[in-house]
Length: 197
Image (tube, rainbow, N blue to C red; front, side, top):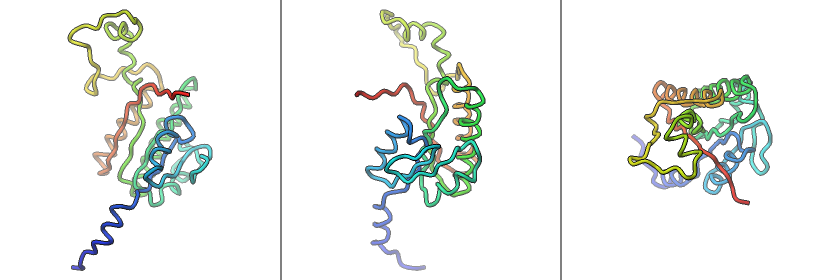
């Protein structure tokens, strides 16, 4: 058995990992990618170039082939790209279902073992149709009951749009890839994000 080289181990432990961020041309992906770039090597993947970062330009909904070059030597994928807002259901399907599958499968093939993927708090937005959550959200004078009503990760999902349904697909796909392919997949249900000017 060869002797361990402590210098090599230390260099490897201290070297920054290579992170691929999707959606860096958007608000959340841009904030995440630029923050991570302070201590890691960050590259971008998306439909547009990201100034200051090596970018693979492709639409993840178009297939795995365009994604593969972006994954070379990548340790972690941070998936922040998504279609959202007032777009067609077909657009949500292409980006948030077909595209997410393509990205996860390309990551598996490339040997990437860590994915952090953006989901959305909108997967439980249906609770806002019923009291007491409805009043908590929409009535500033509403007195919060005791005990306070809580929506947790154990609560049933209540999507209200194809967007939130498509983000649940990402969560379920992440569980499958985690359990079937020994990958670490973390899905974050992001709420409203604003930045002060």
